[in-house]
Image (tube, rainbow, N blue to C red; front, side, top):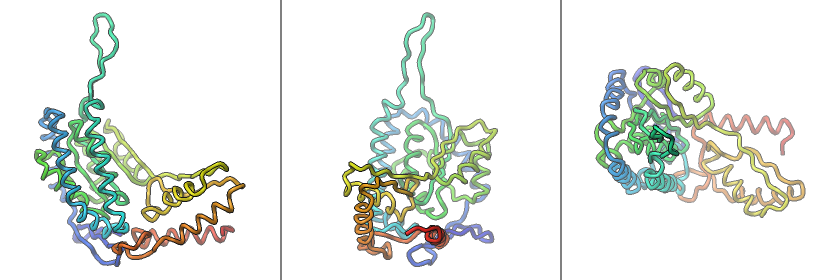
Amino acid sequence: MSDTNSVNAEVTVISPINNDIYITRPFASPTHITASLKKAKQAQKQWQATPLADRKILCSKAIDWLVSNKHQLAEEITWMMGRPIQYSQGEIAGLEERARHMIAISDDALATIELSEKPHFTRYIKRVPLGTVFVIAPWNYPYLTAINSIIPALLSGNCVVLKHSVQTPLCAERLFQAFTEAGLPEGVFQYLHLTHQDTDHVISSGCINHVAFTGSVKGGKAIEEFAAGQLISVGLELGGKDPAYVRSDANLQDAVDTIIDGAFFNSGQSCCSIERVYVHSSIYDAFIEKTVLLINQYQLGRPDNLNTTLGPLVNGKAADFVREQIQEAIQQGAK
């Protein structure tokens, strides 16, 4: 869990491993916030003028740095948000795969589209950067969700200001370190540790041209409110309520393996986690039997233990919420 200390104005990260303080970081001051937004605006024109080929090289070097430090990054993920250590490096592998794919297709994705001829007109669609992109990233997949927005924004010639979750502030710092080591010009990629109030202020400041947010529906609604009237674009990837359907002719073991992984991975803390399953009546009993057998193979324990396959929820509040859901379901007749 994370906590905001209003007296010392700092982020305090409580590790779900042992409920101790893992790290503390100061929130950005108003002066720092203003300076960062100004620096991004000043750097953007030069970055926009940088050839795409050079932007691709610099982004690739940043990914190289992250991959070369994957052991450290994985350990930090585990201690900040509780994912079992044997899976944490997988997020860096996923980050690399996504980022390199986006870099590889960027020439075609950003190319000018020539339209059909029309007398006395030259018609085309040209993609131009928006300016400064404000990326607000969550803790549950702290690198994957962030890189989904950061790499396209940078390749397109935008500057990026990253506000990461107060549960995973080290991820913002490591991303900044990666792009700094890669040689990005100053101001092109920055991070800010922000309170909710300061986050709202940045969105409504008039210095942001696009907001990319991954998180809760409640958070998405708040961002829409603060972006209103700014004439800026907003991209919202919010939580879902995701069902799975198992037909009578499904490969039963494949269905069980896939669905249970989708429900249990990351302790169920995923934007697209399977939350309910509809099974054809003819295979229902067999599905339940195989599901129980698989679930009983999970090893619950400290996530820094290599044998653990099911770690803790991110904090006590989240665990209590799940306990309440279980109790409510049982009271309503669930088995």
